[in-house]
Length: 154
Figure 1: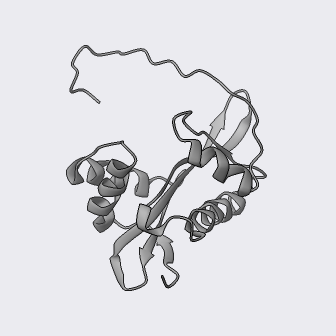
Figure 2: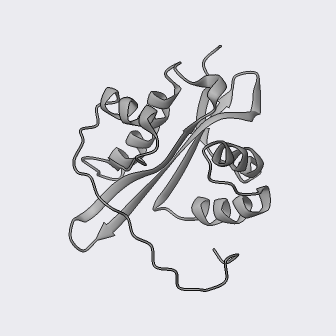
């Protein structure tokens, strides 16, 4: 497979981004992704980079999302909030290229390090991140408190 092109996400990528998120068991339809993407692309604190197929710029092989935020306990902190590589493009270095693109964006904002979380049910990512120069910093539990009783509410 020829090297994909890493570029900033565009509004018209919503359908492909929805497909990628659904592949990773985070189902969302194109309209839902369109709303999310509009907000993310308008924020200077958010970055969404995509890997487009070299043969078709509308065919996405992967994506990475990063956030730059101010936290009271840490100060400025950068986090990769999503990394997805289409199964047909895995083990070809694309995940590393996407991480590098996110790191470049973070570095341009003055970041000195980047955090990433990995769900315990994704053992393949637990092998990937150390190979991409990440060090395990801690384990944690994540709790959720529902604020609305409507099961369809976001």
